[in-house]
Amino acid sequence: MTEFGVGTYIRNVVRTLARLDHDSNYFLIGSPEKVAEFGALPPNFHLEVLVGSDDTLKGTLDFRAIVRRLQCDVVHIPHLFWIPRGLNCPYIVTVHDLLEHMYGSRNTSGLRRSVHFYLTRRVLRKAARVLAVSQFTKNEIEKLLAIPDRRIEVVYNAIDERFLHGHATNADHALIAERYQVNHPFLLYAGAIRPHKNVVRIIEAFSALKNELRKEGQFPDLKLIIIGDDLSSHPRLRRTVVRGGVQHDVRFLGFVPIEVLRIFYDVAKVFVFPSLYEGFGLPPLEAMAHGTPVVTSNTSSLPEVAGNAALLVNPENVFEIQRGLQRVLLDPALRAQMKQRGYEQAQRFSWTTSVSRILEIYREVADDRVSRGVAAD
Image 1 (tube, one colour):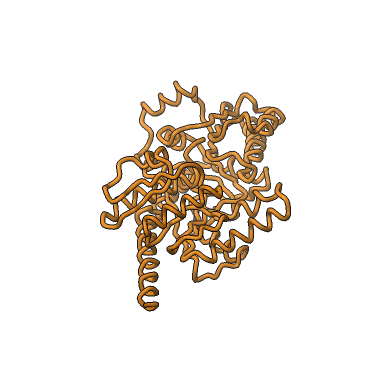
Image 2 (cartoon, rainbow, N blue to C red):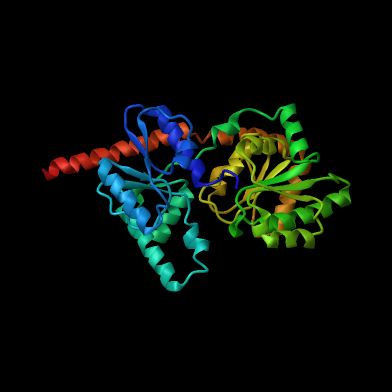
């Protein structure tokens, strides 16, 4: 897997906290391998080893015991969960999306779905604060789980600083040419490969685009590169490629580290991301930081994240995706405008700004606890 999702969020929050706050004590509860991903941290950050997953009963009990022993003032759980924690201090939860309740529960029984939903809502209602990564996600939490508006705060994600290291060099171009045999112009998708990511329609739109470009004698060697999961677990994608007659033009690259992914973003002609559902959607911003035009969805959080810097399309309409790609590919004035707007849009989201607010929330929640304790005395 590439480095997408909650792991990116945790790494950037921890690293930014380490830069901003040298006074408070932070305890990172998890495996040594995961904590090692943060790199060197200041002495006010400490590892507390939790063996196994925290979403099992044993993991939950072990987590609770660690928090009680440390006498924590506040706990930040960086992803949505449904097993009640029973902690002896207030906790904050970050909600990235409600995908499990939108798509993930379709293959589970009605009883299991109901229990999962009830416990998730209970966990959020008991949280001292709920952090939503977009206004869209906040609205979903209010609407679906009936959490009061005053308990939820929007704190945006931002891109990893490694995507801000400037444009690809000649050596970078040579690296992807030699290591990945990428020598032709290409469209790019990067992200997990799951049903809501809509990768099948990307391939179908690319096949239609190739037919239209052929009629105009444009970009005869254009490729589609898909960076994400191992293809072996997604046979439907291979069938779609064959059915569209583009088996010589679509490449699945699987895992790509950030240092290489940034080169692909930089070199791509267009970044295509017509996801059906995103709580935030970082990849379009990552592409924008490299000046790459973006075609993305007009649904969920993506218009909020992309602003006026992307071309928005209906993700359920293959030909609208195709026409969007064709327009961006062939219109130099539009490409130049999108490039400039993309730079500006990516800079609107900052980990320093977001984590500064998270730090304020930690202190507000801890102070509230002290005030209630004093009042009780």
